[in-house]
Image (spheres, rainbow, N blue to C red):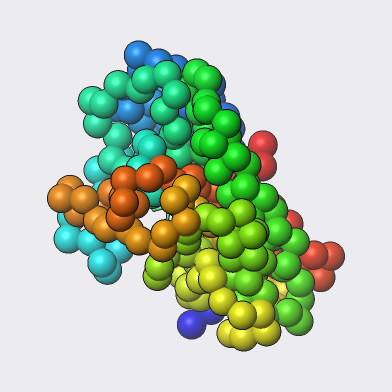
Length: 255
Ligand code: MF3
Ligand code: CO
């Protein structure tokens, strides 16, 4: 069931989104060679709590997981697509790092992700990340009252395929509100003009994930959380929480 949000609920989600965006920017700034993933996670915990918000991911258990999520952030390095667990791993120059953050304020969640380079990134990694960011932008641009959910999916896939990148199967975005994952599921592939009609008050987390090799293969690591590319090639991930309004899409996860 899709739960529509009132303007005042969307305003609360905008506050949560501001906390998420500021946290992402600070973690990106701190993501230097020699820094461990758990240090970045502690930084995020401190910033979210100082802002008077709570982390959405810590202790979260979606239906498909057998354990509660142990981190504040998802930190996914190189061939990790999403849901990488922050551990003692130390970042190295040239690593491609996806930072995914969720926070809630007064019971409403916001969820966003960015991909950054540690030190200097090679041209291929930069292109992969920039293309994934463009897929997110195009997905957001496809949001319009009266349009259909798969218009967004199609916009994301068009950018991905146009650049020859792979898209992990059965993964995508989601509704978001009082729960981090709400209906509807938002595929990252598909023909336009299908699925539910987009209505004022829907809030969607749009999150393209693209694979450098062009193959649509993914697998879950032994930790039960980290989703890796099937062939060891790298992946990028960008995400915003977006409200559907009569004036068009409103991005909630901006500073
Ligand atoms: N943006 C990620 C998603 O929607 C956040 C996952 S949080 C986790 O899947 F706790 F499930 F890892
Ligand atoms: Co999400």
